[in-house]
Length: 383
Image 1 (cartoon, one colour):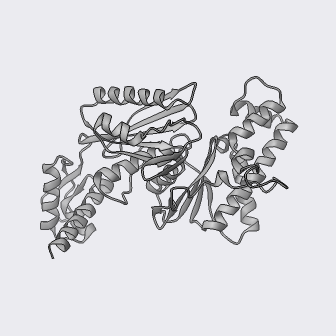
Image 2: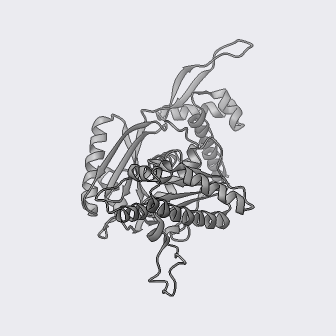
């Protein structure tokens, strides 16, 4: 019976906290109505949060049409502390800090010339110390976005960084005395789509296409990571054009159609010393034949990838997270229209609203839910 009461109390506290987070400033009476608890219980829970400084009073709301006393409002205390997400990309580091109530505080970006994880760790130390000097609030937790396989908070494989047997989470946790979570980058883009969407997303796939290709999978509102964290490694699937070759020697999907591979192919085809997507856009608009052919091949390959993902998972929505489609929205539109004509599934195929920083926002969202102890917490997207 004691365990039952504690479980119920914990569930009630989480429900109240979730309402305050998502709807605050909000009155105690409105919280009580939303979570179907009596006002006395809700008042006791909220007073406990106020005592811990996690929740603060936020003035008075509007009185009802019948008049009477104005309700006292409460909200999450933005000064309670902040979280940080770090994305370890290809020889680069992107950082986002966010207050516990979901407001963006600061960001950083650093480019390296090698894959030495020790140099990256030193930069992380430097940035986090700088944040601690800037913000009076506590650093509550850190999440690191890994372009690779993560299992049991360990980096199993990372194509971009030489980890040198370093326990990254343990190293950072001991340095700053905070919880540290490691998570796959594509999983975090899926978390972003779930938590920041105006619509409730229960089943979705987010395909992240940069130097590699991965997919974050949401099933029944939760991330699906697979048995050892390898679910969604679609870039490692075999390209069937690799005829008469063993599995080991066959090309992988990301070896032939990742955006970086396409950029390199166009650069080589045009014999250029420098290239970026803006230059490719100009060649596309000028109807350069070699560029058009390479992009058409890319379009066909991505259409096949999307088709295979949709028939495998049947998601409510498929989100593509890739800068190339921000520069060439017409390509994704053609893929979407083509899929609609050949498939009985009416699956929306859309470009992420935050191609550049989806994993960072998703990482902060996941860290905040961890700190608050709320597994499903809907954040409001702060643009």
